[in-house]
Length: 447
Image (cartoon, rainbow, N blue to C red; front, top):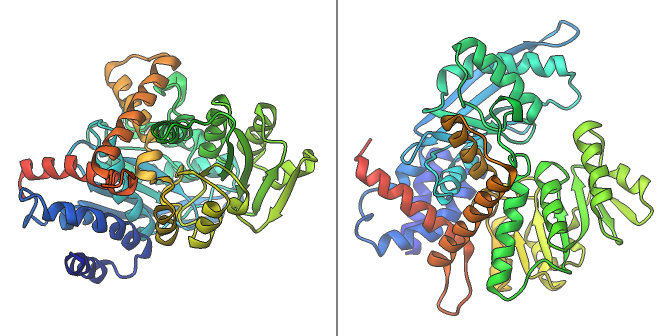
């Protein structure tokens, strides 16, 4: 079996040797899915996984825009349409200087499995640009978004590809993108999700990824006779996902100890309560400030510059910042300090070495493709509401989200439970996501 996995990965590396993040994502899936394929004749000899790792379409384009001083800038835009076997491509747009084809391919590949797990009819895709919205005026962001959509519009549509937001693409950016799409195409359709409430958006969408991560972690805890009440929680990040993961964990009775950004993390020994969390939301969402300012305001908090929060003693860890932020040494520290559950709110925030340590320590570990699927699940619910021309209540959307996350958890347990009773959620998520897409690909033939 090791020889089969190596042969497969050698072929992937030959084609994508310059894309480390993508290779890392494929390696994780190959190690769990190839043994499953070998045991099931229906998939054997069909090269299903090799077909799944090759994008159906990879679009790269120039984005030229003018800043407030009249200077012209050129950025690179992308859309990776990975797999449409079970529905239209679905996945976020990321605006960040680190964006490149490797990062977007890994995100698109992960998205295929994540969307499959939601049970909703959505394929996988991802896109974005190396444009950095930080430090730009609203007018500059608008001009960039309009220029970006001038090209992207020809590749997307409500039954073709439905992008959403991601890092650097929030309500402001979605509004500008949607406005230009509507003008160009002369139609009002659900082509983007994460829209404003008054123009086709869904309640709970901003909260969905963070809420969903906590719902998934709660399901894991409950299978082992535990819950969030009275637990110490360490969270990385301070953006949308981290904020609402903290909010839902607070609602479940947990104590939030940390939040972070690219400059470092704050540790509040008294806990981040709802009032303090409201301050963070205003700081990050409206004032676009740094998390270090939290420590200036609250004497119970200390800011640790250039560090990550994984050495803080906790019961539950929720990495909600970015890819590969939690390494093997961080994982060892969490296990040593008594952490019993780790659920990824970001995409692939744990390195392979970290995941190995979690599994060796037999603690509950949820990969992002399962635990952070709440965002795209609610995007799918927004698509449904757009198609039906109706709006569901906050309570109805939240309950549907909770039900979806519990269903994803059950699917992971079905395929991931080992003989000793320990559940390998990585294996469970990969196989459960693979089976649905693979069955659809087999039914549709070699295309």
